[in-house]
Length: 264
Length: 292
Image (cartoon, rainbow over all chains, first blue to last red; front, side):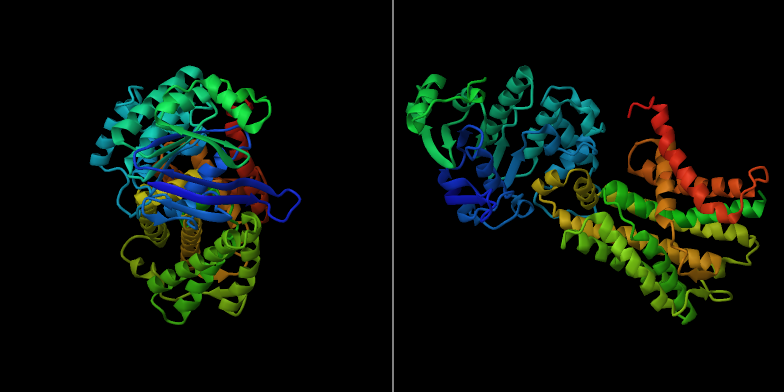
């Protein structure tokens, strides 16, 4: 289970550029629940994800992941609890390292790293099997440098990397946004498979309302640093993208002019 | 070039191979342009020379020199990581300070080690001529250093250091304390450079406070020559490239300086060095058609 309670994040406090990115957000995600988060640019999606990942330390409020209070912990300190796939394929993996080295790095996420060889025969075989499951033919390129792969291939490997070590939550940060539609579809199918097989507690930030409703158990909409919509169960099943837009308009009392929300 | 001059160049190349490996760790693995080496090389020489003269076991003296180098590197890393001083500037500050430190360590600008018991002296007089013994001895140490650094960089701990240099954000997301990796990497780098300095003092019979000038360029030259020759094909090849690059660099310098046609003198060394590094940097670019 993960929970954030009454989180406030202020950037540039006391300066003319002061911005209230999150304004009292509370959200509890049960074990095994898959939550999708939508919102326009500047709504606070990325900040919320950052607060969970440790990139952003909340100005006020409390963050709990699993059984631990991680409010004050930095990214590296809580990495053992948080698996993550970034929006930019170049961020989530190390271009200068080989595929198998990236996997070896991820397999020890949050653990002590010793002087033993990172790639023994057993680990090599394990990594090869896991990559072969992707059916992308990458199992024959395990020693290739990561930067030889396409963006989609890198995201697929990143997803495998995220599941090599245990975690209390999987964070997906618009992880299909930089991909072409075909590859985005593939990555989403893969995500669905991995999340349901491993019963991962997941928070996926997305720009696409379609994705937000098609995947997961629950959808949260952010606007202006606050949660303006939180639907799950039957009421979510009947929900259409059009309803979401209408709801959004009604709630904010303003016209929606962000095309990005409609795409996909 | 005479046989002795040739083996002398190989020996010097092997001594500077430690510098090249150190520079490789800082510049390539950690992506940290570290000029501390211009100070930590003579620091290693000074510490080793002073201790040897004081009667300390030369192996222990070299070990202490490595610790001194590691501490110098740590100062640079702390200035950068803890106090947010730009890495290049932080290293220049340490380098400048080390000049004074080295003078303090030695008490004078130059310390001679003639007739002192060094790491190499037990190996002299066993039938092999001295100018073979020295490169052979240093060569064995270089091989050990290459293997140790190679195995480290391919271990779990080494992977986190490489990730820190290549993609710090990703490294942190994997639970790597990137600050600690920079401390460790820059300390290790300068420890190797200081060991190079300690061996330089023992093979050449002196430690000089000015011997550090241009160390970084020499180290970088070796790294770049190695990369130009071997390309990017893994850690071990890159490390071997550093060693081969360092030796070839010394031979090239020796050839340039000893060729009568060019009419160069020893004082032209720095110019030739700069020219060689420039050529090594430009050549691969020309080969790619100048597009990059």
